[in-house]
Image 1: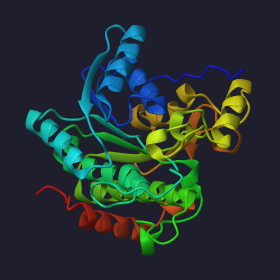
Image 2 (image 1 turned 45 degrees about the vertical axis):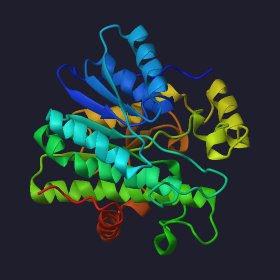
Image 3 (image 1 turned 180 degrees about the vertical axis):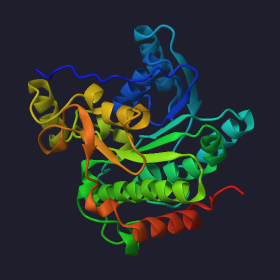
Image 4 (image 1 turned 30 degrees about the vertical axis):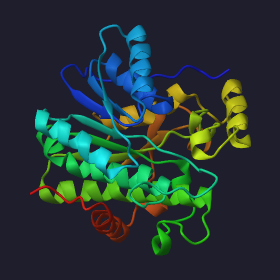
Length: 312
């Protein structure tokens, strides 16, 4: 059986946190842990009913939880702009942003309403646009921004010559490409924040491996049944071997976003064998995430593709 793992989280009373993908899986447990520490948590979700149900589950554990369910589809730049516009009009500084949501390996290439490949749009471009739109609130809150990558960011490469995978779509490599891209963005955000004195701390986390719905049956993504991979991960998680639980997999992001020991520009993941499970700890950033030149390149490409630039 897997061991129950938890970490000390500072008192977050009065702090505003935004967690993408908080209606399910790892994102749900991130939001729940922040709420238990006293943060007011904004939960932007694509399916509002699912988000409200998740918020109710958190309140059952933490009756005093302050939760704010909003609507967000990260694959849609209009939806990202809409949520950012709401928050900017309200004007409340954001203390914590955890870019966690994602989609994983649809079996066939899917294209968003903006014309982008689904994984690249959701995992990277949506988070890029949201973070850059919200920079005024993040700067006002001297925010801790933690961006979730994946063990897949230690494989393959950014598909620079065909970001939309129009020629020879490969589900796994496309996923890796999107997670490397968002990791490069987060590291470039760190460098720009330091150079410009924005007061923002940007770092990276990854959850290891755990049995979430990313690889489960999702008819809307063209996956009619659970993958062999997710069935195996569920077994390993139950046995407490190699894979963690969704709850333990949430802790690296919570640690990276809240711990006074977690530093800007650093990388946090599980500390167990091969960094697949276990308590969170710092680790060396994957080689694919280290290049400042690639960070600048992905930032410039993302500005061009989304039309979102640093607010004046």
